[in-house]
Length: 484
Image (tube, rainbow, N blue to C red; front, side, top):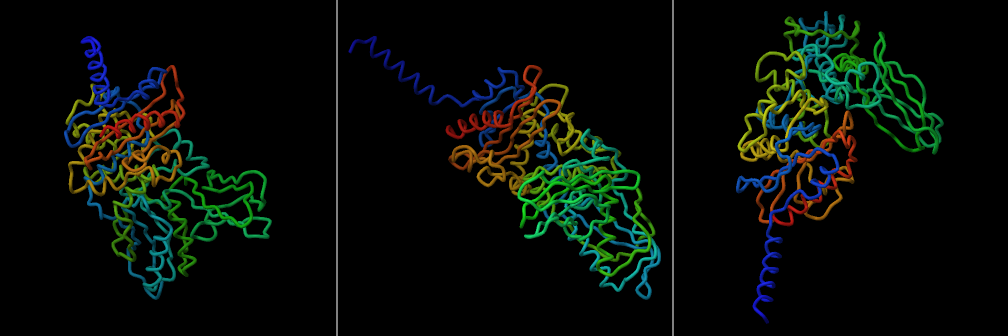
């Protein structure tokens, strides 16, 4: 073989080896960006502490629910993983002859997962103490958070009307994630379905309309509206025979709603409250007698629920709680409460994290479109938590492995994607589309990588389908996993 032919073969072979050994990149996301998407993406080798791949990694975009990664880290910095928030019943005086004279005070401490089961436990303790009647009102303390204004378009609109659960306002005390839990049952042979509270029987607010039991017809509709008289529920549509549906609708006032549900439960357990339900922004200092107490779910479980189901209520209640715990002062707004989250991102450096304006968080939930983070901002936080051996097990345990995900679109992908990825997702549709994923990748040798990918719509391409954005991100990450 002639010398120049041998040289050509050697060069060609060398080029193939170099291509095979070249580091993975973001080819599919780059094509998406060339079509008008705004992309910030990074993969970081946590063992070597160096970048593996970057694309606009310092560009700050709207992260949507990827913001929950930051409040998860901040909460674990503030409390131990097994910390729990207590809910109490208190009074100013002791009961005499089964009668409690004056008000019964419901006091919360920021339990974001308070549910009707907890309220039943409080009622059972009160009855076990021998109390059968309260001569005053059920007084619900809004403290320690106090009064909060609505912070997003969705939550402001939800003050008057809501047909969903995610837009409930954060509250120091709120049941069922600040929502009315409604069960619709369609017994075989019935013509009209029964509609009730999930664990309270009859709803403590007006209910209008009816639901047909039929195999066809208009879809089931449940809407909460509010007027000067308070919340009400309107139902319509149909439900198939032999089925049952459970739905949540955001309350206009979670503190007042929790009081109304508790008053109904007390009545069903044989404890009457002569007055109505009232709320107060300040703690009731004379309510010094503890009558009943229930500790909520451990913080670790709250974080798992927040991350797995992207629960906005848990995220923003924890945001308020973190701010209060760190400053000792009730924040005046959610944006003010989120300042420690912004500081956590700023202090989690270790590699270049972009230029000013810096990271911005005005909620832990990500409902606020003013939140601005880059892929490197998120990787910084993921890297920080990975190196915190005390908190990392609880933090990592809150991320979803695709093979176990509730949503089918996350389970798509090859075996590496399904089993070597642990992630959090985020999405919004207005004013432009937002799709993102962030979390951890396991190497073939058992090592670790952190990643974050944020895809926002832009001026040329305002709406990018979630399947398209996630498909590009998944394809590029599968390439990373093939190489490592």
